[in-house]
Image (cartoon, rainbow, N blue to C red; front, side, top):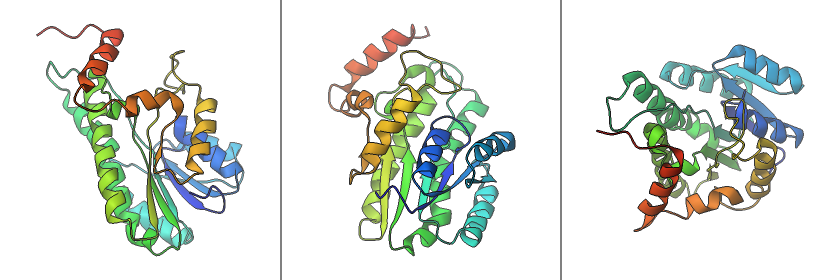
Length: 248
């Protein structure tokens, strides 16, 4: 996709990967509007990036999505890129009793949110000569982490939905892209084995600026390439490194 001259709406743009991409795209000359539930994080981000805008959004709430979509179309009629980036990751135990709050909030944020947001802006995006929907999935959508089974499952589901969305929009002006990050160092992830945020943003933008449908940085390629008849081998290896599976 083109990296300049867009009007871009990014969910979850006040922190982490969302903020990093928002700032990078802002510096490239795009009009960027970020969203999130934490007003203080949004204000902090736009203060550090003059010209960037923000709107409060709860992607778990269909009414909030509908209201924000209406506001965006009215206030930013040139909007041509939707970046579904908001997501949450919490631990769960698929061998035990699932926490209902973890289940509902994770599925609602990571899967229902992007689907509802895309739906709310779809007709507007299709009216543009050149538009894009970008869905942030995860390398864990291809090689699930057992201690975050629900999160991994939502990202696998969003990958599947993205494939369908790309197919049905293939003859329109809307390009559908997927970014599948590996572990990335952010405010909530200090794991030294994860990819530094600056490196992830730099490599992501290089691929995003091409005609690629999937934006897979080098560190995520082994995850993306794993699915197949023998995919369980890598899944087992990854999870053996992470934790001892819970006993029944």
